Length: 312
Image 1 (cartoon, rainbow, N blue to C red):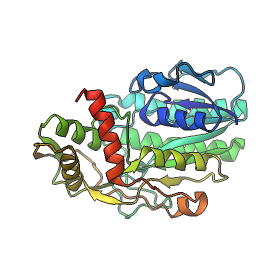
Image 2: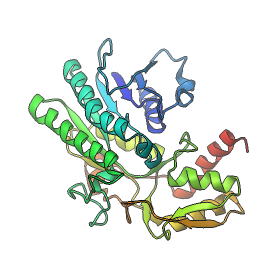
Image 3: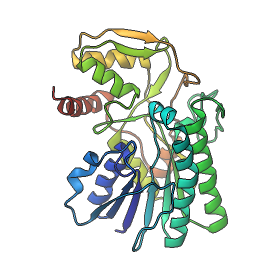
Image 4: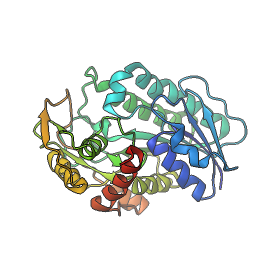
């Protein structure tokens, strides 16, 4: 079925994609510098002949021996707490890392799928967000290091597609959750779930009226696989259009955990998006894809994973 390189392969999404690619008969090379990823996420694959792991920073020259048919470029800090602490590294992996991946793809004749993000839409003035929307991003704000790194990565990817004829795909990923999320990565679900499990105050930034749309990781990976195998070079949103306010989401998690936690509101971070909801019209039409896992079911599965890792 082909040999696949997954950068960011020891991360939350990279590890789940490794599982999926192996299940579908591919050989997988996972690459990660382990700044935010962890070998624990792929420890269950260590003994498989079809899997190999390489510790490497893709912001430097990449050399992979043997043929490559596909490259999934998922290397990047992806949580605000990470890219605010690693601003230069975030910009470098989006620029130099993407350039190196595309150069490798050109040399190997491989198809590349770039993991972009709903953050390219910034704090959107259009709702829900279709791929045709160009975004409302503050390039010099603290979140700009991630937003602009991904916007540049998209531009570089399309340049290689048009100028060098490299086969490219771009997925714009909306909020995703599931097992193996870092417990301390600062995003809403891990923060709420860990705080609720410990019966600590659940921190909601702002008044909680800002919205997000949460997609379970298995649904996301299926959408990504279909996009990889499609003929679509233009960006495609993959996410769950079921929108929920952050305040309601926090209450849902507290209820699921049967926690005694209370919600505490804190100041909203700079440039935090007020709304986030994917328009998945193109994904439905081009990929015949839409999410299938209900929030209640996905949260229950994620809770079991969090309980196990927290020893509760």
